[in-house]
Image 1 (tube, rainbow, N blue to C red):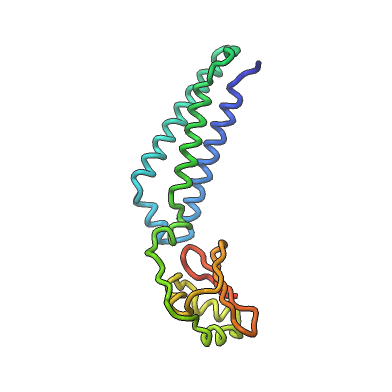
Image 2 (image 1 turned 90 degrees about the vertical axis):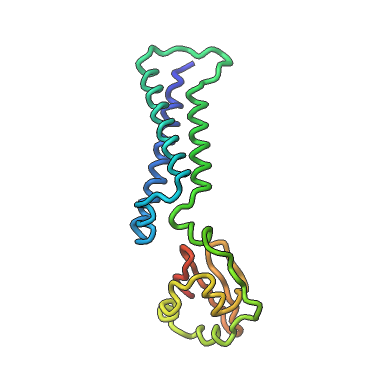
Length: 191
């Protein structure tokens, strides 16, 4: 059997890479939105910050353990013995995955933290949709840009289709219809 520190080193590298990717995503999100930048300068989720600090300490501990192993002569592990450092690494990666799946990244908070939508109990505003259809793409997008989901519902009524790419489709009789594309909880274009 070979040296078992290579998979551990690769795992630690992976963990550092994941942590760097998350930090980079948060940094890019902070650069793209002034409101997000302000919210990142003052931590809002103490549990998330505490979990990140715990992970940071665990990774440091694993790094030190690996550094100590590299200075020791290579040895063959006993058959059936578990690798405690590898188990700790897997646990740290699982914890990181849990944090990233439950934390709110800058671009995903708008809908998660928003109040429930109130869907109007009325038909679509077909006249407004027909009126909007022939308008130039840039003009109509600019006219409604940054409308929230609720504002679009209030203005146009419930959509015919809601897609998982953050777009709503309104069928407009006699045309191909209109697609409303949202990002970060706000309307960005209508095509």
